[in-house]
Length: 175
Image 1 (cartoon, rainbow, N blue to C red):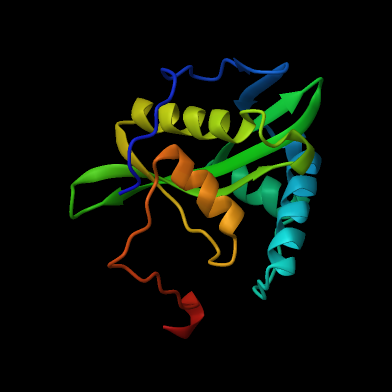
Image 2 (tube, rainbow, N blue to C red):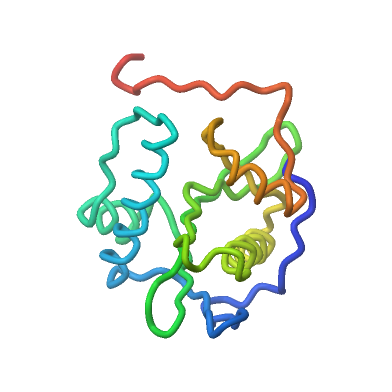
């Protein structure tokens, strides 16, 4: 799996303090614009690295898929001085080989100006705490191969790549 990630105990929805006046809290519908702004920066960065996938996430998708009776994802947001500086989106799943719940991290982004201040580590730590609170035992995510900066960050947390697996995908309409 991903290796140990040390994190604070689960805190439900209470904000947690991080260095430099940063706090982490659960995303809300009202966070659509800052989350989508950061996602757009993330998508632009991945494009610069060569990502050619469709980029369809926006305010409408954020509200439709993240809120309501059956949300497809949850998330946390990092704020400094009242402004959003990072976010992490996730959903839960199950790993049948090891018979355990897992948290799948969909996105993690920290604004470049806020990097190296513990924001990404705090977001991952809070995600790990929420995973444990739901009975989960591992965090899993994918890294776009050219994104060496992200890989180095995750390896610094103790994460490691799956060497024996290749992720695959197919459109549901094609099956």
